[in-house]
Each structure stands twice: as structure tokens, then as C-alpha cells.
Amino acid sequence: MEVDCVCLQETHILEEDVPLWAYEWGGELHASFGSSSSCGTVILLSARQAGCATRVETDHEGRLVCILFKYPQGNIAICNVYAPNRPSARRDFFNTLPSFVPGSAPCVMVGDFNCVPDSGLDRLGTSVSASPDAGITELDRFTSAHLLADVWRHMHPCSTVYTWVRPNGEDASRIDRVYAPVSFTFSGCETLSCPLSDHDTVVARFVLPSIFPIGRGLWKLNCRILGEAEFRQGFETRYKGWQTLKPAFASTSQWWDEVKLRIKRYAIQYCVTRARRRREKFSKLCAEVKFGDPSAVIALQTYLDEKYHGARVRARVEAVEAEERPSLRFYQSVSSSAGDRRVPSVRATDGTVVSDPHGIVRVYKEYYSSLFTRGNVDLSAQADLLRGISKTVPHDVNDILGGEITTVELWKALSKMKNGKSPGSDGLPREFYRTFWAIIGPDIRAVFEDAFQNGLLNQSQRLGMITLLPKSGDPLDPRNKRPITLLNVDYKLLAKALCNRLALAMPHLVGDLQTCAVKGHCIQQNLWLMRDLTDFVIERDLPCALVSLDQQKAFDMVDRGFLMNVLETFQLHPFS
Image (cartoon, rainbow, N blue to C red):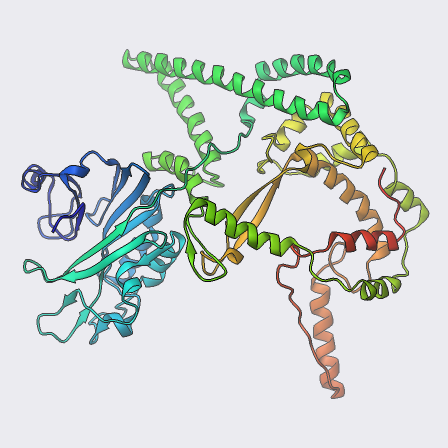
């Protein structure tokens, strides 16, 4: 049998055994060493695949070895595991899998899992363990997150086979399995008797697909440079020059879009120069440390701490233990974090699994086009509903709603926004606007004033970058991805300022029983009302019906036209 990769478990391999093993195999060997009496996992690559393993991860107990395998169309992670027998240790082991498997590539996971997914089909007899399949929940969580299928079960949905049988024949189970991405094309999977082991061999054959290329990503301003006087002074000097270019543009809005591009170019140029200086500084510090300079040791530690901070930001780490130090795996996880958001496959409306990039885009386009398209609206019923609105706002509040936007309002809105949030397509975060508000604030106000006069925001303010966050449920179902639109901060700044204005009108428009969107109202008031109502109907022996309504995709299906009709019915002044 000709194979490309062999995964072995419980080999008892030691480090000194590697030369002999490699010689007898004739190909490439990667191992996690156990002891001469337990554990030891090995991945063997055929001679024609030698050199394809670009990265190797192992644990310290001989239970896991994972390689990043490079082939012409992309990379895949091959992970070989030998799960513990003890239930609690097995759970803990499966919970550690994400830290070893790179999220930037599809994963093939092979091994002895010491538990089965379906005790009815995959187990015979009764195990001596009180929890024979403990850890299967943790394993399922991992396989679901990586969109992995049990290859043998995928190809034999109702068949029974066992890969391990107790010598007396009373107990057996299918604890040895191969998991591969559902996007792969499976051409076969079978079990073969292995006379040198009490486990059978599982042989799986599949075709590696062309991997969807990951783009360069979006640029984001490095907020650390905002604290550097050199960058701030350079920006302020350049910005004054950019302000003189306004007459060359048809509108202030167009000028601002061009300025944002120039800000990006300047920041990138500055960071390139900064990075070169830091590399030179690092080399110099390393040389000084070698010569025994104690002050260089402290300076080098400070440099490494700053590098660690940057890695934490890129990895979106919210909190780290005070004494925790960065490891190689930590820095590697930063580079693979973008891959965790890949969508390698999706299920179309006809039930087929689509894996090619253009097909995935087509399925999501069809789904969201249907979701965001306004359905049939009964305009007469809508008009009847709106005729029931009698509330209005006082004239002084209405005048505020229709007044010109002010720099003070914008600063107040900016002050209430939080740091550390993802920016939109222009890459400029809230920290940038706060740092340079004194010089850019008046221009931002003028940009918004120009938008109100023309009835249209500028191009970058109308652009949103959609990212999909996974929800619980079938990861192949488009409905189980929550679309989050990343908007530019200048757009959010205007929206926040207008929202602050509307907050003045809400108490005059929203009923007392509505506990949302009005400052001072609390959702617990509804709970108290339900409690009192329940006591009342029980005490009076009155008939009562409780109706709970939960609209699917409620926020995604809001009709903007209806919202504007509501505002007009309330007779609110249009914003200037």
C-alpha cells in the first residue's frame, strides 16, 4: 500500500530511537516522545513528501504531535493524538487542542481518542470505566469549530466496525478515527487488521482542495505611535499643508476622503522607518548584552515587553496573568488568528456543501440579499398604525433636533466612545480622532455639514466591512453566522451625536411601559409588572394569556422606510 502519511500512537519512542526509526522508514519523522513503557506519538511522511512539514508542535507527554504540511495549493495541519484513558485527563487534553493546531489552515486529525461519538454504533459491551466516553463533548466542540467530519462514519453512516477488541471478545469500540474537513473530497476509508497491535489500522483517502487564499487584511493605525512626539509633530505639520488643498476639491467631503488616504500613507511610512530603527536597536542591545553590559539587559527586557504588548493587541488578548511570559506558540497564534475567521465551506439551500471560494461568496450573497431585501409590506396597515400616533415633542426639543451639528456635540460623542474598538475600512481608530481633535475637529464638523447640505455622506463613510462571527449550531449554515459591519469612526461619531440628540426626545415619544431606549427606564420594571400581574390574576381567579414574541433576525429585517415614516409622524425636524 502506497501512503503519503502514517500516524502512530503509543509507540514508546524515545529521542535516541529517532535515527534508527528514520533510517528504517526512509522518509521524514516527527515525534512527541513518551517513555519506554507509555505514550509516544509519531507522524511519518513518505520520502516524496519530505521537507513539506514547515512547522512542528508537540506536547510534553508524548500524546500529541502536529505538523503544518505545505503542498502546492496551500497548507494543512496534520494532528496525531493519543488521548488519555482517565476521563478527567481526557477532557483536559481535548480542551488543549486549539493551542496546538494552527487556525490558519484546514486540519486533519488522526488518532486513538479513547472515546466514541455514538455508543450505540461505535461500542460493544460495557466499559470498565464509569465514564467511557467522557471528553466526547470537548472533542465535538473542537471538530465543529474546525468543520471536521469523521471520515469513516461520513462514508458509512449506519455501518458498524470496531478498531479495538478486548482479547476475550466481550468489549470492542471504534476509538481510532480520522477527522478531515467536510470540504475535502473523500475517496475511501477502511479498517485493516494490524497483527502487531491490538488496534486496527484506519486508512483514509481524500483529495486536498485548493485553499482559499487569505488576503492582506485591512490596515489599522498602530495606536502606540500616537504617543510619540515625532509622529504627532510630523502629522500636524503635514495636516496644515493638506488643509490648503481644499479649494482643489469639489467638496469638503471629497477632500476629507483624500486626507484619510494621506494619513494612512504617512503612518505606514513612519512605522517602516520606526521598525528599521527598532531592529537596529535590538541588534545593538544583543551585542551589548553579549559583552556583559548590565544596563543593556534592562533595555533589552523593555524592548521585548513592548513587542509582547504588540502581540497581545494583534491577538485580541484582553487579560494576561501578571507573571505569564510569552511563548513561541503565543507569537505563532498571532499570525494564525486571521485564519480562524475563514469560511472554508457553507451549505447551500439545496443541502449541498460548497467549498470553492466563488461558490461560498455566491451562497452568502444569495442569503443576505434575501435577508436584507424588504418583504411584502401592507402600506394601508402601516398607515393605520401610524395614524394611532399622537405624541409629539416640545418645540424647544424639536428645534435642537433640527439645529446645525456643533463641534461641542461631536467632542461629547467622541468622549463617550471607547478605545480599543475595531475601526472601519480607513483604519483610523477612535484614539486617532481624540489625539488630534484640536486641529481636525472643525474640519470634521464641516464634512458633516457638507453631507447634510448635499444629502449624502462621502464614499468612505458609506462603506462598511462585514465580518462574520460564529454562533452556536451548524457551522455550515449561513444563518449561524452573525454579520458585524465595521464602520469608520467618523461615521460612528456622527451617528453617536445624532443619537444623543434623539435621547432628548425619547422620553416624550416612548410609552411608560416601554423599557428600552429611554434613560431611567429599566427592563426589570417589566419583570415586576409580570410578577404583580400574575399575583393579581391568581388572587382574582381571572383568565389570563401570556404571549411571548421573538422575531427572527429582528434588527436585520427592520424596514428603514418605516422608520423614516415614524419620525415624520412624530413631526420631528429633519437634521440640518
